[in-house]
Image 1 (tube, rainbow, N blue to C red):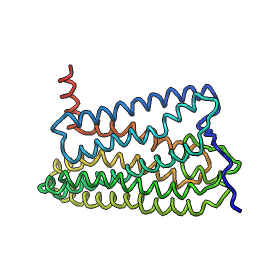
Image 2 (image 1 turned 60 degrees about the vertical axis):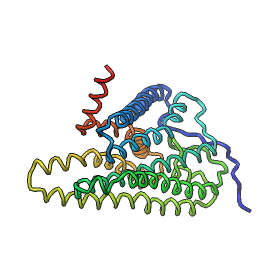
Image 3 (image 1 turned 180 degrees about the vertical axis):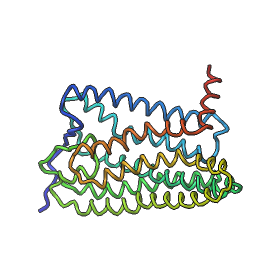
Image 4 (image 1 turned 45 degrees about the vertical axis):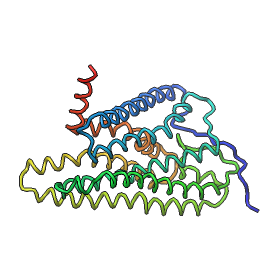
Length: 305
């Protein structure tokens, strides 16, 4: 007969067992989370109130900011709670819910980065047709499709993962619940869940990465065909912020999931990079490297003060 789960909760071992280090980490991650909320909400507000930013590129950027708030809020509040608590537990149901939303928000961001790469591809290769091609209906469809596809992907993975049994082991060598961290705790076969995770990673994340890659190959050829240096520089500057965001997200995310699940410090650092640090950096990347956003912020501040 199949074993059934007798474990009702897991223990998130987190980043450190030293109370003094935990206090320092709490302050650090509280500041990061506050900056994440403030930066992304400010960028959303600027895009909303400034009519000059009502174009597809900034519509997608606003969606990315909203998504970063959601993605960060899935893991950081529980991380902050555990850094202050002696009992660092999470229920099995709560852990599965966190797995679902980490997967859903991360998957949506992967799709949205691919959509933004396509937007830059159209803007640079067909600038005269940009407004016609990237119409409101297409933009809404691309964003809705990104959310829908990611949530469907997350739902498939979590439904398969719900069949896992947990009998004795409770310690998760991580600060949040992720599917790879749960496999060593299962007393039943993880092959079905691992296969579903592997297939979805290949189709979803690597599929989006290939779309981004081929978009930038076409963009690069177009930029190189521009005769003037000033024209090439201007064309590349419109892509530099997005390319930086892609490197941060995919670089840390792929390294995290390609590494063996061991609870090592490198694994935790890569997880922190894509789930905690990157959502804070994205509004900085897009505001510091984008003249239109900086000008819009100045206009809004002048109106306020």
